[in-house]
Image (cartoon, rainbow, N blue to C red; front, side, top):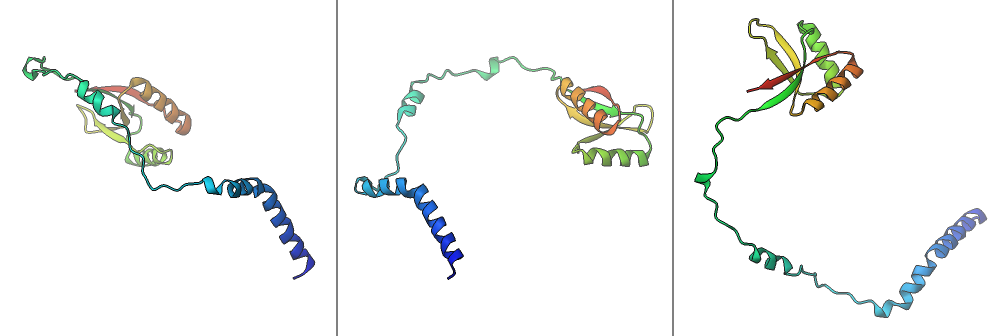
Length: 149
């Protein structure tokens, strides 16, 4: 063993002893106070008492008001200027590159043409913020449409 290797070994040993000497000496001094137990602590039964104290009233379901009509509202961002199949494919590829993968094709009532849309979003403000992000990233400005039943 040459002197350099011996010197490196001594330095590493002295540094580790310097760092770990305090906890090691403390562990040796208090080793007779250490006890090992295999008991797993259990939760106190305080919660069971609270559950037993709760009074539950019976609810008659027949007396509840019935929902006659449910209104569902959502928002989509549509891009009516993109109509050619080649343009749609390029646009979808750009959207997938920025992480958007939920697309809709909305059919016009009178025509067979489809309008590509992103969404649906439950909140209008979320649709507006997504429209601004798409406009900023791929330079396509869309229109926000409300879809309801």
